[in-house]
Length: 242
Ligand code: SF4
View (spheres, rainbow, N blue to C red):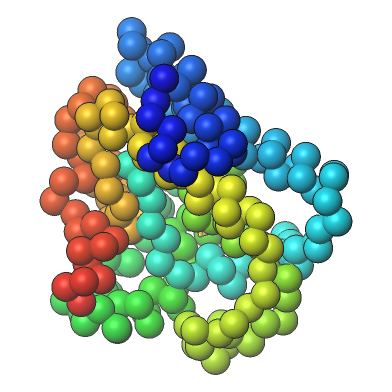
């Protein structure tokens, strides 16, 4: 059993660790099956939130189809999230769609290359996510944990903050999904660490660039190889102002 103290001793993290550990035991002979760990932990987190919504009086988020203000910001992912999305892209995107994705990645990386950290933040917070398609997420079921955490209680406040470019706007949001999905991501990351897999948090665009550039990034990473190593981690890039 995994050391449950790594994500806090509370019952929720114990439960999520148990799910991740159970999947981990099944992947010994098939490392690629590791992507099912993130799916099962996500499903458990979904279930926890659905049960909580049934038993507690909870506010209803103002998020909805066609609203994509929060999909114009810098998204960071852990390696297993990038690997999961990469598997999905290879399996479900047409060759034209993959080419379109690569073009968006290239242009996204190009117009922020060499810029200061402040400018990169400003530009990326006005730029649609590489997976945004007509205001809808093209990888919705595989979207990263960070995208699941944000549940705004005011679409109007999101719109006002987006139009004004105020990155520090106080927007009311649900705390439950934020807590549960952040915990779920930390549990997945902690289990990957115990398996000595490459870890860190990388900007989605750069991570997908690396994944799509390699012939078989999912197999390389699940086999213990290096896929993201030369990318700046979230922590380092902000510390260095890059
Ligand atoms: S991955 Fe999907 S949900 Fe997340 S920012 Fe991109 S388009 Fe939005």
